[in-house]
Length: 225
Ligand SMILES: [Zn+2]
Figure 1: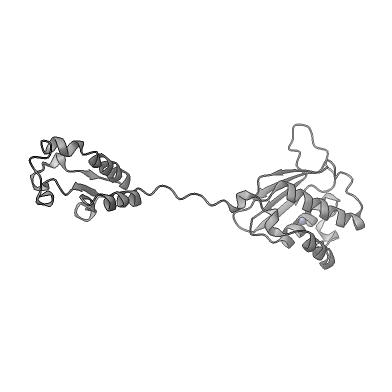
Figure 2 (figure 1 turned 30 degrees about the horizontal axis):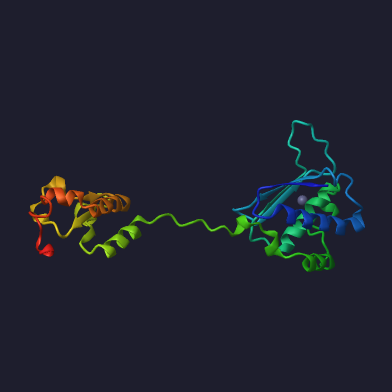
């Protein structure tokens, strides 16, 4: 049985079924490929340029044990149609039979053969789960910080980048504490939303406020009164 080494976004088992089916179709005219059993096909994902391409050794090649055992290379993007994949494989298989380009039609499968393939296979089913994978959106510290601001109405995070002009600068404040009184080194500033989020979480613990305000008796702003 032919072997597939697959790193594409297609399902190996379903590709194998398709390729075996096409080989059977073609063998009606060409006969079974003599080295079908040992044929090794590498299937790769195509992300750039043409949506598919292929290459194959001409006829049977005896691989030395140390060399790459591949007889056929196929690169297929997940956007390829069933027709493209079927004709590409049939084309490369013609090379495996030993034919040069001038000896066969570039798309070797006839309209009738393509119809038979169409009746048996469905492009969507050929794809593996990998093809439908949608990467998770990373944590948004900006969103998480806004969630905290909605929950604690005394918490505010202001973008003060404009004033300082060297990248993002965020000011994190507890409105209950009188900021007029604060020394510069007590201002809570962050250069990223992660930093602002961490500061917000820390302010929610109220450790700093309790210390700074002598346990909520001095330096409280009017907001708190
Ligand atoms: Zn070719």
